[in-house]
Length: 603
Image (cartoon, helix red, strand yellow):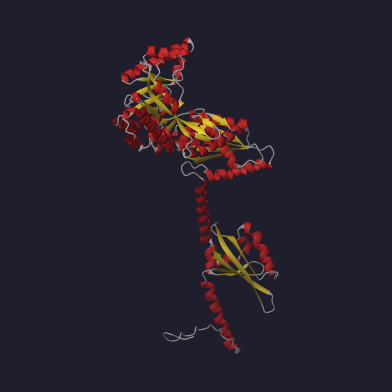
């Protein structure tokens, strides 16, 4: 190899052991020197070293070894190595030592514990070798001892850290309950036991807290978190130690009851409802909550954990649909209904693109003149296979999936277009107005005002000819924000109707603050005008009260669901301003609505 820079490095010096002298005097000096060298290494070694005879008693030990065990050399020499061991370690150490003495092993290595003089136990790593004479006979054993306390401490810390990480990965940080991952592990194990052991069953309870969003939004997230923790504690008290209470996410909890049947699962659900019924003290606030609970059982041997959880979730939604603090047990019809709903959702996503949606129109009649004053635009879906689908089926799906926003925009645009066409074609109806239902999600859309403004400008429509119908519930989530948006619409002279009045949770304290143009009385009160004498009297007073309230707010009243001449006569006598219902006309397609306008009927 060519050397490029500098002188060639010197070769390292090799250690060459001195030759053993043959002269007796020199040999004696040599042996003394070697002994001194060995003694210096033996005493100065950082590792503990012990010399043990073939009977297992200590002959010699260095300073490091004596420091480890806390004994002095004379004390160590008086004891066999077995008395220095932890009693549990002799069962492994003694057989190895006997094999070493018998020549079956040249050395052995093990971890064990020494019993120190102060009573503590020291973890060590021991390597023991045998030294033999020229004839091959064993003379003594050399034990090399390493203190592994720090290594054990590090391993313990590592295990503790791993356990903390595992616990964190499998538990909810807020409530300390098992999370979704751990729940699915335990659910899979429970279902497997059901498969393997005849007569063993398990149940899943899926809980969703009622009104949690109201508490969280009104009192703040800190108080909401306190409520979740308090609920978690109460749920733990309702089940056995072998059961699992998990937080599934948000305000949803799942309980796995291992080894149970339907009646026991329903009993636990009832116990939970009773426990949750008691008030919660949350940082000085008294709060109440209930839960909608769905129950599902592993009934088939091939039940899958995710299917069991899905079934409980379906049952929970059935319970929630029945009202607050309800419980429902899963049955197969729920799954069929869920599949049907999923297909409906899929079809609805394509309905707008394929032009399957229609608007039908129902007249609002002025009860003073008996003439049509406005038309309500109502969405209809003409499904290519199922025919006309009721809004009662597809509007909730649109609400849940977010499709209500594009659907609502289409309804607004089509109603505005059709109104402009009628006003241009039929001069006699130049004052015609159209009302459109607005969903809660549309009411929270910041772009709604500009969307309506653009439609009015595009079709040259006066703002007063467009009426927006709002439900009471659509304004409950955030009354202040809703009122602000309604005032912006009112500033554009768009008229606002409060729909289905009397069926929601109206607060008269904010009702007078809303810029309403009319109140629509729910059809249930109108139908009651022809019931039994007591029903007639009760519903008559309700309608009279609503009319009086509307007069105080200086807005007209529209009665929905007018179906008989007797109802119409009663409404006129009570001073109701407008009527809408089958007595005048069912909702009809645009062509039939045009014919109705041209006919200009009187009632």
